[in-house]
Amino acid sequence: MKALFFLYEGYVDWEISPLSYILNETGVDINTTALSDEVTHEGKFRIKVDLNIEACDPADYDILIIPGGEPAPFDKDDRLLNLIRGFDEQGKLISAICGGPAFLAASDVLRERKYTTSIDDNPEYTHYFNDKFMSETDVTVCENLITAEGNAYVEFAVAVGKELKIFKDREDELETVLFFKNQLRG
Image (cartoon, rainbow, N blue to C red; front, side):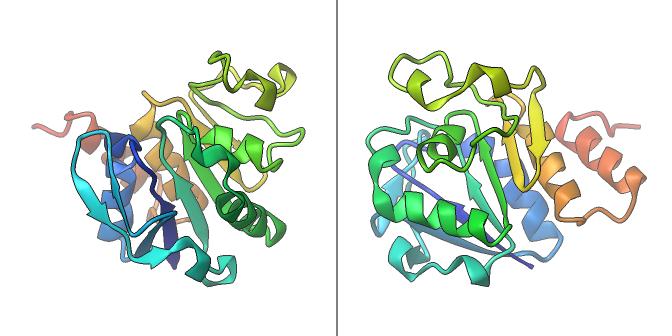
């Protein structure tokens, strides 16, 4: 199984940290891509990505993962929007948290699907979203899309894990939640 993380300047690193940990622990191959060779995340660490976005083929991956952050000006970049459309056209999983769903909306893959986001009330992005399809839940799985509120990063990680079928059973899934919520102490 193979996952592609799209990273961009100012992305919120902690929103995808539990997910990247789970994927690594379960043997999922991970690649990172961006619109440039390096990006700096919200925590101010500079990250060198594995592949330039032009080198990414959705056929090579099972899922695209997009962290939250400030979407502008990246929400207008055709290279990214076309990558997202490619994943959607192939029915591949696409997951986005916090501001990440703005990229899904900008690429028109949200269409009339339920979604969750933390950025829908920002005037710069309201034109992307149709409130009629906004979910009231922290995490929404609709067809091949997984979207989440920014503060639901553990729940987001678990939802992605469930869709990828990486948990051995329900007990494994619950143990993962308890681990990240610091509730495994005996």
